[in-house]
Length: 151
Ligand code: SF4
Ligand code: SF4
Image 1 (cartoon, rainbow, N blue to C red):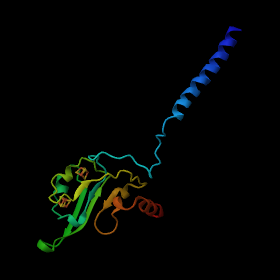
Image 2: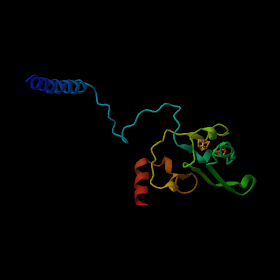
Image 3: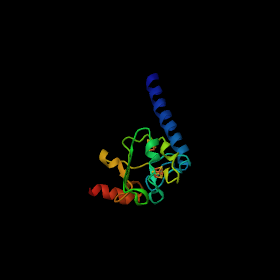
Image 4: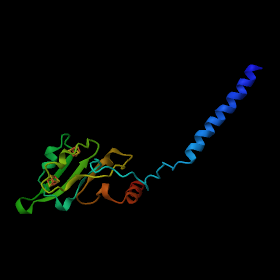
């Protein structure tokens, strides 16, 4: 009989305890974010994907030399004033987000962006090309996803 009463008491007390927690949270504002439409404000020094503002790039290769994992690929053709950069790519399979490439840049065109959500299905897609066709990291996110789904 005692056990029966104890069980009844335990049942009701745990239900009320749970309902008390629910009631407490009902008065609070929701914390869920509707990602990717809503995002946290990132701190200024957050290191996201590396971005190169190519028109300001002088092809000096200092960033590639500073990179500890050799994941910046720069190719050029021509000499002197005719020198032209034909490829600037970053292999994010290797990048360690150390930001060392941004330090020696004479024009400050290479920076750590606030972009971080570029998940892909294939490793090859993590080699981002900045010259010529795709500048993947800085396309509008929806367009980049649609393009990847089509590929
Ligand atoms: S952040 Fe570091 S690892 Fe990544 S490209 Fe720059 S120097 Fe290389
Ligand atoms: S250091 Fe700056 S200017 Fe020189 S190649 Fe790298 S991004 Fe371009």
